[in-house]
Image (cartoon, rainbow, N blue to C red; front, side, top):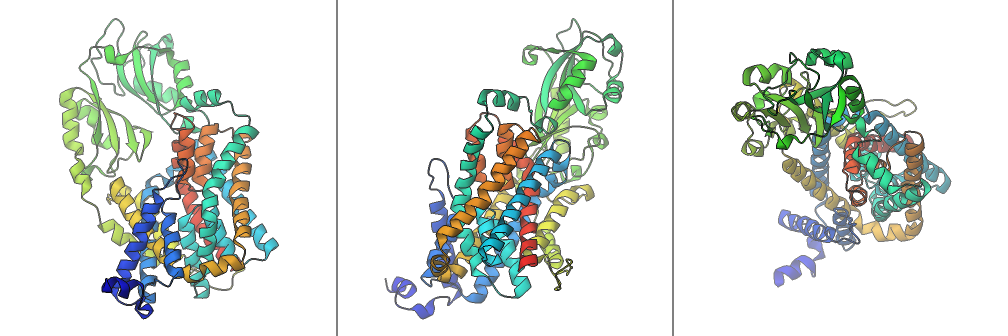
Length: 562
């Protein structure tokens, strides 16, 4: 009992003293915050934001850490968090702008621009400090990396910390979660959504997802012009990416061959094709008609199996370079990368962690498995070199000065922008140069959550002493109203623009708008509204670009108006 009293009651001079004491306080804040984060009200939770709130309470009662240790832990946690985000979004960052992703990411840019304009308007009208507006903006769009970016940018610019950034974030974060959900409900009535029609379109991948997702369908060849043509010739005619997974010849119930570019097609043949929904109609128009054949009921030696790429020697090689058809008599029909299906074209480069769907006989597939690895145990061994090498490069880039016209001082990307950009570049270009940057989803999530927990606890402990006084003096209710405006105005306007200008399916639209605010609770609400996975696909498509824009734009906001 004496130890407990020494720590919590009778010795205020001990607050912040000793590594063991600091680690204990930090761990206690994180533990309590994680426990509170499991609380849900109608399926909605504030999640890890509770760590910040708990830290604010501890900081208010002067239960704090050594100042230098607190600063190090906060910055180190921020680096781990931002860098792990960059590694996660890097592989899909540039590819998210292809095909249907252009329109979805264009809408995200519009939504983020509207939120910035709203924040700047509030800044001029209210006369509030830009640090307060930056914190309110970060909380209103539930973007924790933006909070870190704003704090880091202001510290680099003025060489002092701004407690009101964290205070504004903490006050507006809860309404940032609820505001998006309320906006979704309003949009449903404003846009006059017919749920049944939207779900049918969602199942067919309509609403710009027809260029992103993959469908599997069967076609019976009826066009005499195709009779005798090779698969390669049909590809050249259509100029579209698709794969023929299986073929059943006329009057045969055995699919006896693996399809390749030299396979001849004949009238009466039935094909199992993997392609984007947007390409389905042109393929049918050239070849024939949709068939309702049940391939599972057909007798065949060919089987389909998903294989996990775990050999580092495969990383960065194209499907064509592997020569799987000629060597093993098997065929890769699709590639799943980070939850997104890709058409298995010959020029597609494979990466560690990809799941490839292979069609062939049992012996052929076993040979492909041996070549690709298919061993979860190998992936469980984390690749630490690219993590620490990337952090080194990120810290170097963070301190490279640059200029923005109109700002007299030299600016830097800081410990948010530098590691983020390096991580995105390493995640995307690493496999192209045989650098294995893959880590399992659980390993990446562990690193990200660990860094985020330390950062949020550090922010709360560091700013909690003045939190209550700041909120009361600046009128927390007004801050909440500002936050609601920054949350709801962009979502409502973005929803109307997305529907009437980009013609996006409603369920896809909810996922895109949730992704624009990097708001997982809003995505969870959207997923509960429909059995289709279109909200998740829309969210994952725009998330990399939205996260990048949120982190960069809030720094520019600080640099310009700070």
